[in-house]
Length: 283
Image (cartoon, rainbow, N blue to C red; front, side):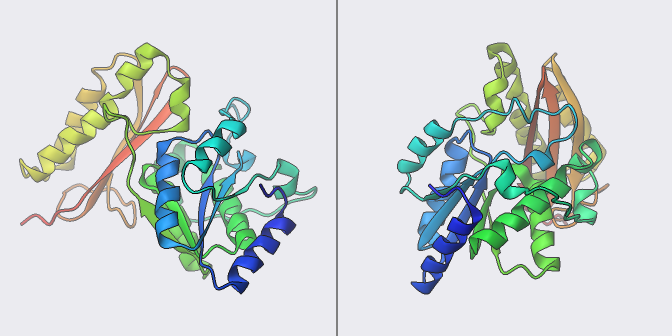
């Protein structure tokens, strides 16, 4: 286990000196099968794999769950041993943000809507820590999950605009048997809340059927169907239902080409997100 940036850079140089391609999976810990799927994919694509475990304070807003965010380092390390024992980087906050740190990476455009409206400082924190991790790790390829779709858009934009020499690979959402997208925050859910949370994935399945099978083009018709399904869970509070261009995140009024549907909702003190990418060209 590596705990300092100096050690990490030394490890990275050793890999590159041996002509090894580094695959990188950044996480905040509380690992589950979704994270492990990223590591497995990295193992298939790269010679050396690095996983970071760091609960990044700069991406949490005021009154968000930074101090309550689940931390389970020993369990995480045991899980990683089941998927090839990648190198693990576990810095503390002062290692990542030294005294006097006063730099922030801001990505415009794709960071502004949806999560950006609700959590206005969130993506600045994400972009800043991801860039720091890219620079420290010397990663050649970075693996992210589709569940955090807007985050992926932000990271891709940052990499493109700043000419960061990292390939970004997006891997499919991993779901529970009933369809709920795996998330570290699912641990917060009570049994009644957990049974209601499945309406998020169910609503996306309905929307996909409307678009692909019923050939419905009108965004508002699809949005209303999603909303009505989610509202069958009495404790679920919808933050947004967005139907957008998957590259720009501009919201659509008519569905004619590839589309991403993003939803966010809260239940109790837990906030959940989910999405589906629908690939279609409608005549």
